[in-house]
Structures are given as C-alpha cells and as structure tokens.
Amino acid sequence: MARVAIFLYSVVAYVLFLAVFLYLVAFVGNLWVPKSVDTGTASDLGRALLVDLLLISLFGLQHSVMARRAFKRWLTGFVPAAMERSTFVLAASLVLGLVMWQWRPIPAPLWQAEGAAAIGLWAMFALGWGIVLLSTFLINHFDLFGLRQGYLNLVQRAVTPLPFRTTLLYRLVRHPIMLGFLIAFWFTPQMTVGHLLFAVGMSMYILVGVKHEERDLVEALGADYVVYRRGTPAFIPGLPGASEDLPVQARREHA
Image (tube, rainbow, N blue to C red; front, side, top):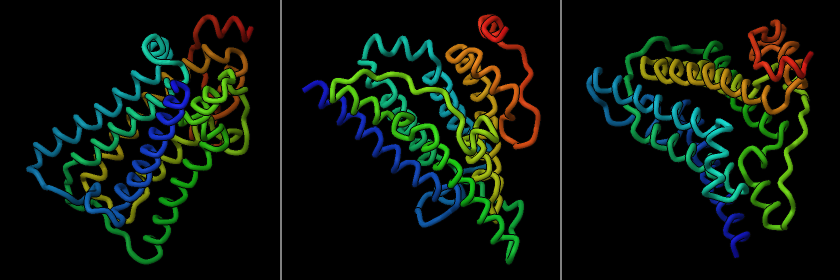
C-alpha cells in the first residue's frame, strides 16, 4: 500500500504541476484566464510593488532551498527517497500558484506592438514555451517531475541516477529550459510595468539559481560536467563557456 500511495502522490504532484504550468503560459501572455500578469485586483503602486516583490522572493527562496543537495538529503530523512522529487514539484507548483493568485497588476504600458511586430513577438513567446517543454523531454521529462521515481518504487526497482548526456538543445546551451523561460517572459507585444517587474524578478532568480545549480552539478558529475561547462555557453549559442572558479574536488577530477 505504501508503494501505491507514493506513486499516487507522484501522479497528483505531476497533474498539479501541469495545471499550474499551463496557467502560467496564459498568465504571462494575458490569454483566456480571469487573472493574468496585467489583470486582476488593482492596488496602489507602493503596495503592488511590495506584494509582487515578496511573491517573487518567496518563489526564488523555495526553489533555491529545496533544489540544493543538502536540503534533499535532509528531506529524505523524513520522506522516502522516491517522494523527494515529487515533493519539490508539489511545493513549487503551490508556490507558483500562490504567486499568480496574489499577483498585483501594474498595468501602466511601456510598449504596445501591432501588425508584423506583434506577430513576431507572439511567435517568440510561443517559441520560448516550446523550448521549455522540448528541453524537459530531452533530459527525461518524467524523471524531472517525479513520475519516474514513483513508478520505479511501485514496481520495486531501484531509482538509479540518469546518465549525463547532451542532446540537441543541450549541445547548444547548458540551460535550454531556463533560456525558454527567459524568451517567454520577455517577448510580448504588450509590455506593462507589472509584466516588466515579473520578467526582471524571474530573470534574476534564473541567473542566481543557475549559478547554484551548476555548483551542485559539478559536485555530482565531476569532470564530465566541467568539460561540458567550459565548452558550452549557459544561454546564448556561440558564446564561450564558463570559466569561473570551480570546487576543488572538481578541479582535481578534471586534472
């Protein structure tokens, strides 16, 4: 029964993620939903800025803390290892849902594109979300969102780490998922102050979060990731790879 419960937990977490992700697409694009980045209950400018910045900070804090290897080790002292990823996915979905629910719009316009320019921006918006979705499948979509772990536990098979590999978009940039988010957040035919605040806040989280994630990847994968990191740019194809200082253990493995 415990294995069935864990699997059902992973399914519930995944379904919630999927619903929140689809709502996020509509939220950022002001598409078909009653509450979007530019619609909803209005507040005075000061209160809107305060609430929105707190919401973005909460999202960044939850992701940054729960994504760290030390927190994962701590969490698996309380829940089965097969539930760890689904717990992260569940928490992230709930926090992102809270961000969108409580977001205070600041609808002052900064630009409004029309005609061919608007079509081009909508195309880039769609491209960004397409890159996000495709990239999750390139590394194993169901492992990333916890379903693989729940299923393997259900059939009493060991949850082994996936091999490190680089396919398609991962040969061009190290973080195509985050690149897709950046494109989707910034390319819009109608940019408002509130949308700009959302895009800037999420972009700052992505840049900071990627830095911490890469340190974890270097520690976990060693020389393989060091070589990949040095030869592949983070976000923009064609740029040089990273050259920052790396953890001592990884430098030794690379040497």
